[in-house]
Length: 263
Ligand SMILES: [Zn+2]
Ligand SMILES: [Zn+2]
Image (cartoon, rainbow, N blue to C red):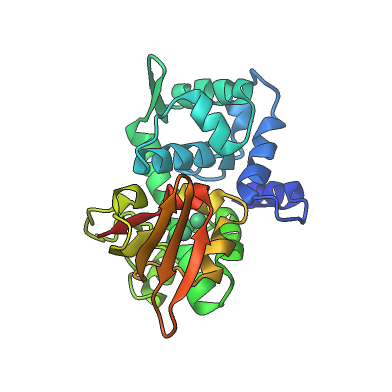
């Protein structure tokens, strides 16, 4: 998908602007109400414009987080206007990618297939970028937001083989199709002060949040890390991160309310 890739690169401003937003900007350049066929810079069957991929991916991740999937929430997560979302949802509905039930959005089978492919490529790319190249979590996530649109079937198979068929991204999010088994995870709200817990998953919504991955990585809060809930005072949560030396750290309310853990 060379055209899409160039668009993504051109739209990038060079700062830490998430590439999710950058690639969406290209879709917004299409005139509203343009017929579907003018949207299709689709070189081969089964490929879609990056914006369709972003929307399907976002709906998939919202479902993964048990979020309410309505246009207003989608606009917030994608950081675009409500009007753009409404326009794109119409296009995606006629392309057979989503279904709209009253105000709720659902992936249609074709959208599900597309989302699964993009999420899988994003998470495999992150594994490669952190485990093999040694990039920071935040950089790997932002790079993977671009890679997910250009990885071919062949490269995906090769990456998966090279990485030894990983079951999750570096942040613990399951790679679709990798049979990671389901873990009954909960939020820190359900952990009593003084109790131990294991961090299992940093949801994609947290990965998208500016500064959140830096915060977690700086505390070495990797999936599998054992911690103790040290204190909770309203929104302010402190935990002890167990390791060679225990560290007592304060978590930001945004992060502490979303991390998924097992008791
Ligand atoms: Zn990510
Ligand atoms: Zn990740």
